[in-house]
Image 1 (cartoon, rainbow, N blue to C red):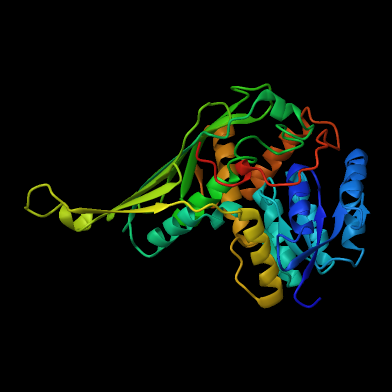
Image 2: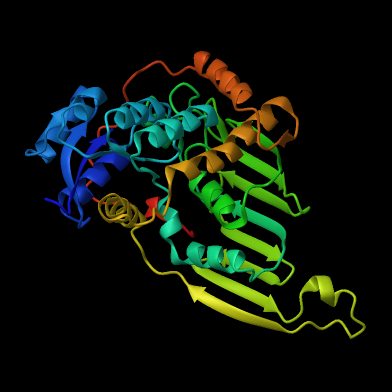
Length: 390
């Protein structure tokens, strides 16, 4: 059909199977599920039973070369995203990859080059960009509503995970299988939103604590300090080891501040820009006006899918372009490199230096299996896959 995008999904674990179920039951108006692929033989049996009329493959190249799809969704472990995407682009397919696009900027830039050469669309699953609160924050900052940026503080510690979570898949919590910990798995959404709303800083200094709360070889807590060209500072704190956790974003500027917490955005604007007000002779009083926006329930995954389909079919602008995925990854790559070296990392960073460092850690990783132990077929999206406030 002319107005339907035939899609294949490569990697049908927890999130991949949720994507498959959603598209299969026609939750995405302009997308049809036409192929599935997974290299776990046991999971493949379950997939065939759950989607009996959808062709299934055990190898990504077989699906890509089958001629049955126009685009693929990549939902494999992170390190496999770039090579699969490149093969898909070379075969003339559009690509929508799960976050993060890869584990190092060098490989993601390779994806970008392959996409540009192919002329096909490249999207990334940054579904939290669909939240009305973060979109409102983007508009406020980008239209000058906060004036000049002064400070960004994001405490995102409600990514709590038990040890059983890390034990659920051989690829999890290892440099060889996942490429990192909380910064590469849970926090990419927040890192993306940070740079999307506020822009990229000029430098990063970070401390990433390995196995602080869990028996894992990667970080389960990270604190990032960043500085912008204008002198503004940012602090980003995240962990999977605190309960209960916090999700609070505060952005301050010369014309006020905004706070997003508990599913609400509060924008406090001041009548006179602080840069002017500081030199006035009046008493310390700068009138304030508050605007509150309540969060609206949303399904970010299906919104990203529909947007991607409409971008392919009708030329709609992508909500989350794959070309922007390198910005989020730059923040986590720089944080790792800073923590490993004890040095402040100036951006843009040395992608080759980080690629060598992460490859060395992957080589010495305790990860050995090529398949996961996860075998559940998810039929509906879990709330944790959208913005969590508690």
